[in-house]
Picture (tube, one colour):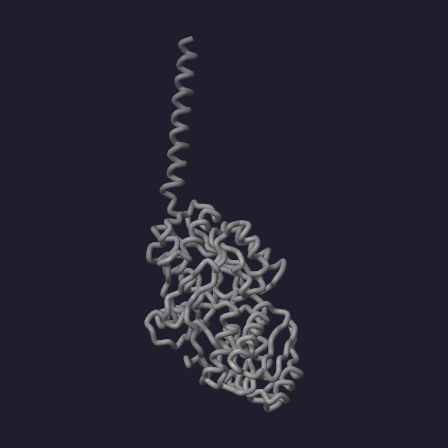
Length: 393
């Protein structure tokens, strides 16, 4: 009996020791695990025809995350960037990229980069209650749900702003449009541009469309030329725009060309003669040659990190996006152990609350603010390609 009591005493003691270590280990994991991070996901085209956009977004986001972590993180917690390639797809690839980010532990979504991919996942992010802040998906429909916000201008704002700029600056009396009828971004801007042009007294003498992957624009260009268009509005992406510029030059057609943020990337196309882009104008939230200190510091840091490459407006919007998220995380006391849904519940209210704003490098010196629609309020600027670089107008 005495031996049995000794054995029981030893077992009880061992049980208490194991329990103590387990409890201490559990508390240490929650309170003292400095490896815990808040994971921000980025989905965009890292390969394919729109890769300049996606890689610019990822590069700038990484730059911002590294800067924030080097300064001690947010409330002492580090940020971690996870990425996925959606190839600018508007279907299964976009969904797969989003699911990949969730598998990697994403808690906040900086994405997607293009409108088509964004439209493919917005209902899924809403169902997951994932806070979504897109740097460049500009279609009005991407902010249909209450968890999604934009850093870029909506298509409607770009279309309206372009028509007003052309009219106010008397750039042309006869205007033509070439747009991609298979793309949500392009058609959205075109529709708003057409409506505002009518209000502004801008005469559209030709309205030409094409479908995705089109390479021959001779019919559209000749129609614009035959109509006497002095300016051609291009609410399209830079890849197709480069082909239009080349093919227009081949028939000695040299109107003014005017576009939106999709043209940002023309100067970085491998093998493209940038002289063909001389004089091309576009509306953008960012100009790399702006003289304010914040812009110049960003440009300097980006060039240092990425082989002297000049950042485009997609990079600038993404850079602002990470800092906006960081400000919200700090303000709302977000911690690494919170679920994506709990984080979203706080951030979607905080970003459109009275008093919240962010003064970044996009917006022509104006503070960025949001309302419950999800659209950003900030000022645009116009730039022109001059001597192979973007210059503010």
